[in-house]
Image: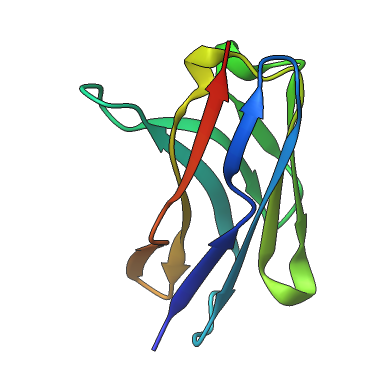
Length: 119
């Protein structure tokens, strides 16, 4: 059974930092992409950052220069270092892994972790 276990959320003041972690287990994922999404109250879920097995990264414009995504490929673990946090970064952050095995596409989500940035 595939599981994505997230950790590292919490409450921080504006300008502070947090580091999120997410470990995927229970399956064979092949070449895949790990990413972080977030959803604020009343808003749609949006992609924050992603990283492929090959190390290619992608960031939302709103977090470029402040957030850094990285991964431990051997462990299918992804990290999101968040610096200079702003109140508008407040949201539930979700980890996701997706890819393709032969002709079958897959995606799995974590349960979400709350990040709250106070002004």
